[in-house]
Image 1: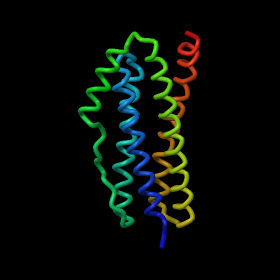
Image 2 (image 1 turned 120 degrees about the vertical axis):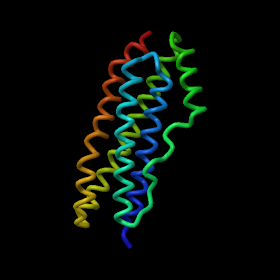
Image 3 (image 1 turned 90 degrees about the horizontal axis):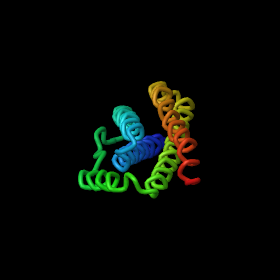
Image 4 (image 1 turned 90 degrees about the vertical axis):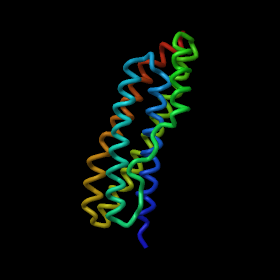
Length: 161
């Protein structure tokens, strides 16, 4: 039996987790307009990836939710209120660094999952899955680069202050 279903499930789970984390980062840092808007924009990529994975999973006999719950309303509301309350506090910078580190690590994991899918698809001659991985993986790499760039810019200011 092929382990392809396990790879698709794990990739789906990790994309959902990354998307949720990006939305949480946006909600915790509403005062930082770039973080707020870009995190929401790139979270949309994970949502699209999850929809596409669900479609691919269906074709391969794996049931995946194409529209999972992305935000828990109560938690999102609390995160936004906390972000607003902490706007001028020095701890906000440390929270942002921790959030960006978490996003970078998760995106790195998702990137590895896309690599695993691509390698398996190539070995199993599953062109549809290879095309999916080649279409989605570059966006995950962009999420990593975005988080890394913000860490480089933000960390000196936060740590030295």
